[in-house]
Length: 406
Image (cartoon, helix red, strand yellow):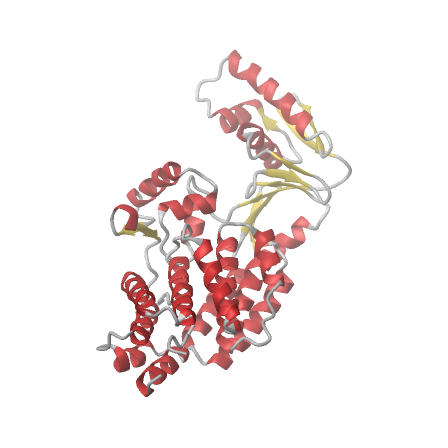
């Protein structure tokens, strides 16, 4: 490897893509192409970065399997950051296996990390945890220890284990300082904001207040009867009743919980569950039927009793009834929640992460774009969606500072 390639690789390792480009921008040999691709990715030109890495992978000879595998890993990270969640996992697995075979354990571990991060994005937490348990971060350089701890924190946050998440973020911050890469430090700071930003709202006895993630964790560990509007379930410490596929029943349960310890009038329940503007006897009959179904569904948690004005929720035992709702509730809140990470998403990736059809997601994006809440760039399959950028904040991409010519 010549001195310019070595210097460019070291510049990338310290988070200096412009310094790397100054050394290899005019070269077209395979190692230079790979380093230029990584530099362009760190600068945010993902399309150009992908093209350069693919060209470098084709240019490496048959005896340069490690260099080709590193290009595949870098391309996979570009796909992950650009939220192309449909990229071929088999290619990444093959690259990781090739790196392990040739003794490049650090880059092989990074390939495993990318797959774990993808599993985390699409909500497959059990698989992500199993993959993470098989990795030992001890030999990782500081930059990759930071990435490892961010994955640990991400899983802990989704599992509502806030102490574990805070500990992982402290380790990530320490590793980022050791790496001396400002973009890494900014990434850790952004991840830490999740723990200090309202994650839900508590509605009880006619009052509302925001809840931090650790308060959500404490609430779920309490003896209260919780109508969880984030997941559309009714639960206590031992029993969880899902009403996710029964929206009318959940709407009734939430209306009754918000009225607790009083009752909810029949008119209010009809408006909430059926959106009925003009109530007739058929609506009242349907309400009685749905209340009977709700009573049956919640029989282990609470009773639903008739009152003079309507119905009341009566929990088993002496305990409070509360509603836990999203911080901001609107029709397409789940789509906005994914776009809030600051990255650009394709509609197909959002559909995969949300478990919805791509057409449903596309309609939601069109409505949000009409309201000025999201914006898109590109066309056809290259179209990406994101929330409008926040002034003064730059999203960066961190790629492994691989040395393709090793």
